[in-house]
Image 1 (cartoon, rainbow, N blue to C red):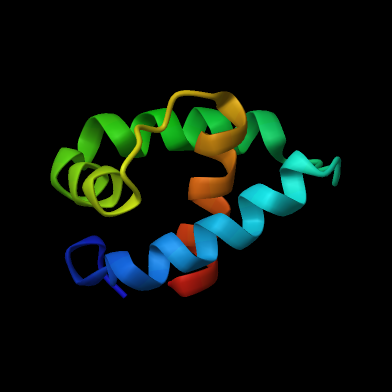
Image 2 (cartoon, rainbow, N blue to C red):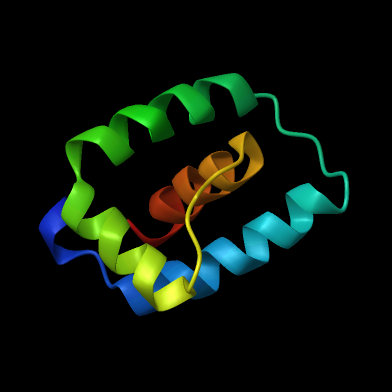
Length: 77
């Protein structure tokens, strides 16, 4: 799946599940790497992130949200 073919609706569903898991205390060994990759993805893909934020009704503002976003991207790719 290319970045241009990301189903943002599916991404929102995947994100919510992953975010809830991380929020409840699940550990993630790749957390720091995911946050760094997420920061790069956000910078390089403003159209996808903008659509995701609009669908979600909120911005990605925390490291936990960025890590969950990247895990969700990986899950649907």
